[in-house]
Image: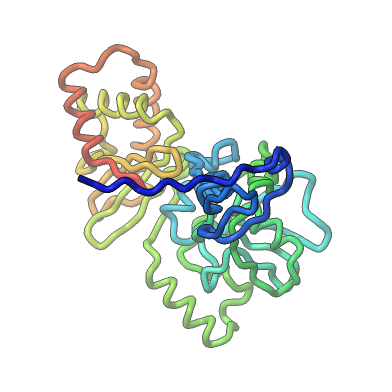
Length: 323
């Protein structure tokens, strides 16, 4: 039989203990409030919870939410001009979101004062939006010609939604490589050129479709794919995809196949396998037609038929979560 753990009697706290500011100490140290418990089990619990609480849809409310997700998870090399509320600070000619920056820097203030913000960096808290906004704000006041390191943003710091103009355009430019890292790649230093070459070799050719939102074609050695970030509620979207799949109209043309989906930052991303010879241009028209069929299927609220339930089961069995 397991032994009982000895009970530790907490020292009574004064009536004003909860009212005064409790300093932060080591997680295993006694809590400064005088409770007799370790800090992590007392006043440190709220701080720990705030730091690790996951925001399921960190880009919700931003212009181009689906493209934010795609640039974070799918696209190797892309940039987007950002429009800030109240305009740009003096001495900052532009702010640009980039998928990846040299040396995996979270942000960079260029010599001319312009700012590059990387979206594919690790973040320290459960709110990517707050961490990125904190990095952006520090980049805006950094010395020109210096990178900005990431950190866990304080809980009272603004989020991207507080900094970016909500009605602004969000138009990603997908690049074949990372030459956007340096203004003059042809005359870059040898170490920079070598870094660019390595990054370019690892980049998967990717194209953003023009006719539908947040859909990205990519080329791999085995086959090509279309990955389409969709803004609809997950359960409703899966039902609609199942209806189309059961009806035999979920493909994007001959030889293409809807193979499943994954979740990323609160949104669902259906994935199609495409034959090697199928280009991004080839799927523009089929994708537009599929978007129309999907809208019709989303409007149906009848229970799924047995065939549709089987189709839905197949889609969900192949679903994974990236974040």
